[in-house]
Image (tube, rainbow, N blue to C red; front, side, top):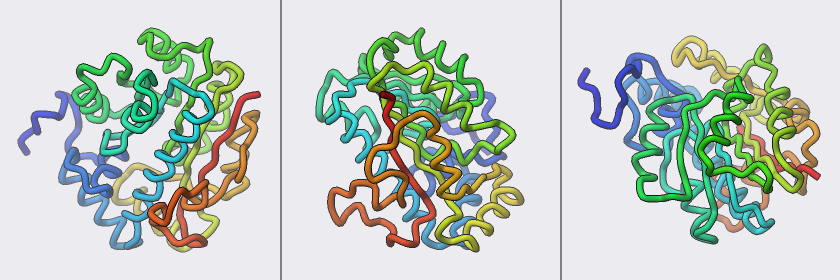
Length: 269
């Protein structure tokens, strides 16, 4: 298999990646055949999986716009994935060109592509970092100079915590980010849930274990709410993706009551 020009050396092209599978579900081009096959296997089990990806992306855009409206001017997007149309920096900087955005992902393909599209944008950057090691991630973020942890920051954990099993104590990782953020900061979380469609959730868990070899941890509404910890939830709390402050009918990629994802935004007082 020839290596695409945008794929860094050392990337395993025979193992699917969550970031590249998500890109495939969104119709992107920065993925490998193995990612497309894994995405298709998921769609064969749950045909509306692409709608979930679109709904998640729509929530991200709404959350970013909301945080800018609240005065946030810097964003740390952890588990950012492959940048596609409607990236955080595009959404935020369309409102205020002075907004700063730092993307962080464990996938070198995601980071390489982010750096490529960010060339010439002094207000945005990308780092390769692992949420399972928040102290190291935060240290890297500080070194970039993009994020000033003396000012409120919008921390984005979009479709990343369900990639962490309970053995990694995801709530502790979110708590570490809360401890590092100044008052007035926000966190936005979206997460796969078993609350609405437990049978489909079970199918995707099995597929993630046996086909994609990624592993997914679907959580209940109470479990996802608990991830916020000391972050104070804002209205409407933890709700299905299309129900978090919808702006128009275009946000209804999924039917309420059928969404496989929940989302919420919390604030540090």
